[in-house]
Amino acid sequence: MQLQAVSPQTLESIAACTEYGSKLAGWIAYTGLAKAQAKRDLLAAKREMMDKMLSVGYKMSPSAFKDYIAASVSEEDYAFELADRTNAAATHQLDLVRSILSALKTEMSSINFYKS
Picture 1: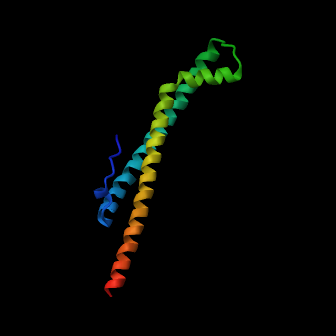
Picture 2: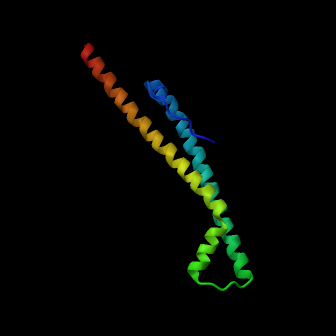
């Protein structure tokens, strides 16, 4: 899944902002699920690697053990970080949409005030 590029036309009206905000809300839900699944897979891979190392009697310092485990589950860690960053990006975009909607509403109120 990829977030779409935002052009000025994407956010040119209240209706356009509302539509884009609705899409973002769906993406945030999806990326939240992806993040949770990636975290589950990461922790399962760490547990599996620890079990393997302990079963064969590896001897190393706790910090070396921790670093080795982290390196051994790099693919799962990558998937988690990607899901986390995508979720954060969508959340920040939604905050931007809210700010633009607020500005557009204020602008419309000002225009309507001067027309009266």
